[in-house]
Length: 307
Figure 1: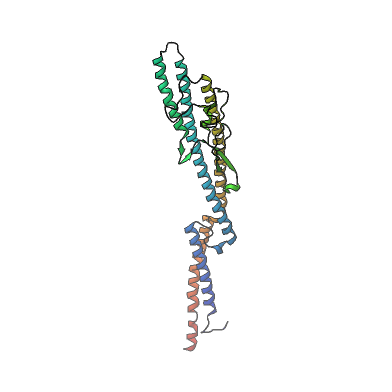
Figure 2 (figure 1 turned 90 degrees about the vertical axis):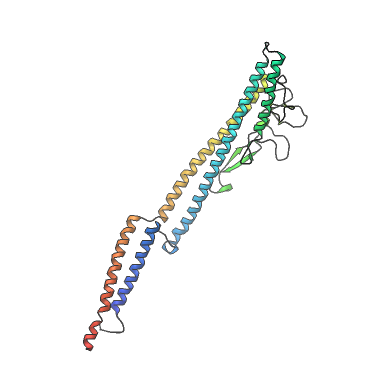
């Protein structure tokens, strides 16, 4: 190779290798400092696109899990209110039985009647309860007509996948508590419509005022027995929905874990491999710098020939 002054091929090659090794060294430093294998789109364009979609799905799944947990809370509060309603109906039945004692005077029965009417007001207040502003119990249909017990005309849709309405949906019932404790005429054979339906012949075990409450002598034991059966049915429906929601939550949690693992395989850096590469490029950068210094000094030979 000829000896030249204007061009130093060895120094040019050494400079190129130094720049390349420095670039790789900086990339390794960036990956190790961020923990990510892909720090910019050019590292793996296809992998980055897949990771973005997986990340979005993971976030939606976490949101769905949160929504299910809120729905479970709704169901728990609703069941607590149903339990309270059942205890009140049970106490009403007990008061009715106590009033049938032949040893009780009219004054004693009047005292029982005072509690009997007060408990009906409390039972009515339970039917009006809400959870974060959302009614726990259905009272009327969207058309304004009375609601029928057992038909579950009012439901809350709970989306149990990251695809929203396009995925699976669980219907959380607003229990028809008022209809469950309301009967037609003087028969307790069935609970059919809520108070306020046409005809004015409905008998409800709940009232918003003492004056509108039923007297202890107006009902037979069969009314309370049927009301407890109806409330038990509502609690069973609530429990079935809660079980389904819990299984949905478990499924979403497992799905979320698998999605995060899949995303990790694409995005997360292998620290052992990358630390080895870092050591390699660190040494190569230092060697390239040393060789560039040697190549730059090799042109000094020309001075000896000129001297």
